[in-house]
Structures are given as C-alpha cells and as structure tokens.
Amino acid sequence: MTPLLPTFALAVLLAAAGPARGALDEARAEPNLERRSGLAMDNAMAALREARMAYNVGDLGRTSAKAKEIEESVDLAYASLEKTGKDPRRSPRWFKHAEIRSNELLRSLATFEHDMSFDDRAILEKTKERVQQVHDSLLAGLMGGKRK
Image (cartoon, rainbow, N blue to C red; front, side):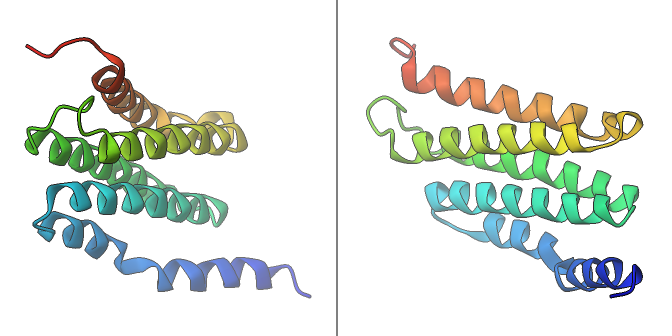
C-alpha cells in the first residue's frame, strides 16, 4: 500500500461529503420546529465528522468552515426549540434530545481538539464555546425553576 492511498481515500470521502450544506438548508426548510431541531443537531454531528476528515488531509480552510457550520446548526436547533414556545419541563422530549446531542458534540469536539496540533486548536475554540452555551441553556431549561 502506498502512502498516498489513505490520503487519496480521505480526499474522495471529502468530495463525496461536499454538499452537506444542503442538509442544513433542508433542516431550515422543515416546517415542524422540533424535527427541525433534530435535523440541525444531526447536521452538527455530520459537520464535525467532515471537519475531522478535512483536518486529517490538512485542509484547514474546510475545517474552519465546518466548525462554523457546527455553530450554525446548533444555533438553528436551539432557536427552533425556543420558537415552539413550549416549556422544556412540561414537554422535555426534544429539549432533552438536543441537550444529549449537544453534550455528545462537546465530548467529540474535545477529543478532536486534543488530537489537533496545538497551533490549530484555535479553530475550534469559538465553536466549543457556542455549543457549551447552548448546552447550558438547554440544561437550565430542563432543570430550572418556573419560567416567567
């Protein structure tokens, strides 16, 4: 096996995964706000996988773009749940789903950051902060007291 073969295989996977931005647009088009949130969180996880693949082939520009897409996806998920107007304590299903997925995303981002070169870790800093903010807000909604 030549040393270029694994790099070539990753490049082919990246090319095949190219139109993932369409998945975020598909989530935005979902009329059911709760399902929209679920689709957005699914897209965030997919964007993280693509960011990792891009980083593995040395494409820092694409890695940064996918980190931004993670933020957009998480923001869309949270905004969609907020638009439902539902109390997370009375109707926790989708809120809890988003909280669990954001926690998984945080753990995966931490692992990815650990695997990165020290100089490249700044790419994920803002993304991790935003995902943490959304996770904390979801958790506070689920565990907090009465809403005003």
